[in-house]
Image 1 (cartoon, helix red, strand yellow):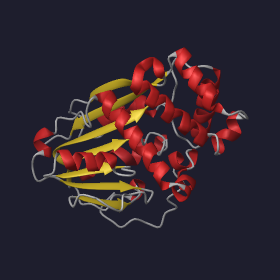
Image 2 (cartoon, rainbow, N blue to C red):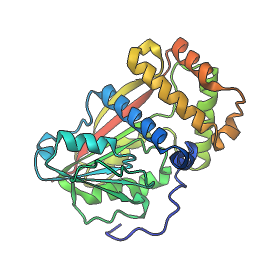
Image 3 (cartoon, helix red, strand yellow):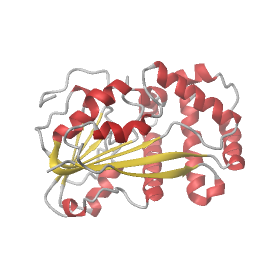
Length: 287
């Protein structure tokens, strides 16, 4: 893929936004959408104790270029720009959900589809960050497009960091298992591997410009319930909200749950000590 303009795209067809009814939520209550995005960002930051794991402190303290793929409402970017003001930041997303006020002047937002090719020259960015896009691409797209395009626009010596969840609840109760199974069934029906995170390392290593580099890997528990104190309460609250949204869409037709899951899931999460795993992979492009 080279530097070219995006084609006309239906920006609401990606699996994440279909599953979570994002278009409806943005249209009806953008504030609620932003609050959910922000809470997810905060929990991931607290789980890993930082906004990134790559060895990029030198990059972040110079006049460099940073790219955030699937930036959503831009919370990672705005925090990074505040902490490290010297680089220029670019955030891209398929949905036009970017902030419209109080944006630092070193951040630019663009509505783009990575699968159509990023409109940037080869070797443009010093650091590329991508978070929670595991279900937005088919397994074939991960294999043939995604990592190749990210490697193309990353400078030699630059860092790529991917943060993704496993779509599997651990220590789950019956309702959580039912929802988890329905989500995985839906994703597989769209040729998406719900556990693609388990292939990230090998897919990164298959790219020539990463093949001789060390692929670093960290994983953390994303706790769901008061058993894990405040972080678990926030994680459970966010996950229950997401599950309720999911059941309003195509996953609900598979799960066939007709009761209000709010109290049921909250009790299950706490009594079973439920969690899911979040992974970070990061690698330096060979110089």
